[in-house]
Length: 159
Image (cartoon, rainbow, N blue to C red; front, top):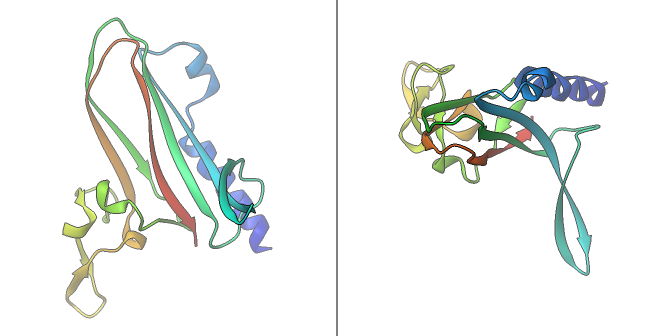
């Protein structure tokens, strides 16, 4: 039952974050395409091998890689592009690399580096925010030249 629920959750995440195919085909001036993959770890010759695969079935503890590809299809430089990804319930931002991201722990109202943010401690005070408190991840692209493209990504864990 949990596995089916998690598969439905991942499907909903992909559907809610992906740009519709029709929009991509229409060659928008600034194109965003979201994706999510499961980081499957196998052993080969005594070494861990990571491969990103489609999330057919996920279980608590599975590592996910969320990515957003961008491309400036326009004829002029695009400036101050803000790309925001919500972290859906059932998913937690992975702590590795989280200090390098611009995040929110209050639904997108305020932003900053994780190490500088605070959340309620449940006892009337505050504590330092943790990766599991993150509700959104954001990037601000200062300038993207015509024809330029790239990929933004973050790691998460199925709760």
